[in-house]
Length: 462
Ligand code: SAH
Image (spheres, helix red, strand yellow):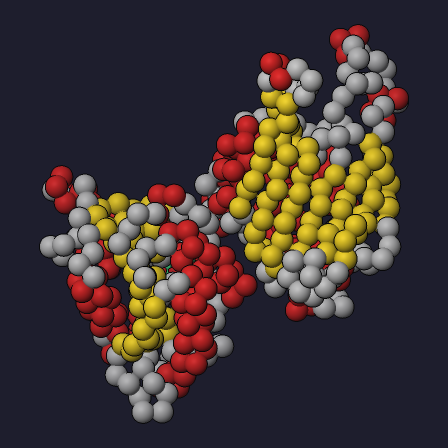
């Protein structure tokens, strides 16, 4: 039973710091069902692979138990030594607890750094086929290459087994990659080889809290991981709860941001600037990412060229407010068909978001953790890939002109960062070069001779 984790981001041997396992040594620990080892078959500056191998004592579970008559040969002849099951997940949890907790004392800056990672799973049991494997990992921004393993290569007519050989590649932090494996291996197998107690709910939320809530398969993952309906209900309620709390907070923080910017009527000016781009592109299908309460959508649906306007937001509360603002219930059927609100995240691929002429990201990027920006770029410019993308964001240098700011000198408590003009331009040009877009940077609002404009805008076009 094994899994390999490879980094190809130089200096690739930094993986050793992140995993707390030296590339020159083999580390082994005892686990309930055998012994788990980590070693590095390759460790160069360009490529470094850490392989976790679990030696399973196939009889360990039966030895201390009274045999049950119905068990037959199962205790002696089973897939445990070979297949990447919940036991591998337990071993990963034991071996890499520090990395899973996001601790790296020697090189703390590495913890949040996304690396080009490859995960190799030579034999993974999947109830639900390759399709399920894709549905679980692709939204987390992995490229999935997999093939079914024949039941017996000598007898092709017997068909395929439920085992799959998989290779997952993605730009991820090591911590996220370990969390994904830890939670999703037992989900793929749809079986757990150990007793499930109420603390499993906490385990799931602690390892999946950052990404599970907005994963399109959150229900299935939770159901399969916890198996017991009572625990599943509790976990889903707790995941939803975080959303509700933050919705209330969001409304308060949004009001504070609007109060800061309102003397400039900045919100209106931003929408005007974005609509100008939509008009000059003659766009029919427009996607508003992080649509909030639907201020842009409200204006898009009365544009003569726009045939379809779709708003996406991660917050259920914001979408409800958008529904009310747009009066979707009372809307004429003709107009209603042209507009749609979807719950989704800017950091997950989602095929519903493809096929648009223009994608807009208005005052939303600064709500993402800086370490998720690479994934965001992959999703918006690589996956959604609309020919025109319009993005606006605050210019931090302008903040000295505002009286009300939060404790960190930013405009909104949920802003994870705000870029200076130089930082924004460098990021935007980098995106242009990486994804093949032309980039035009412009300003919104009154330009201060020293600090520049309050809002900066980039139009990316292919
Ligand atoms: N574009 C709107 C709202 C801006 S506020 C406007 O200009 O009025 C930022 C919005 O981004 C919020 O509604 C928030 O819920 C949403 N958001 C934050 N992080 C997100 C994510 N990861 N995925 C999708 N939406 C997100």
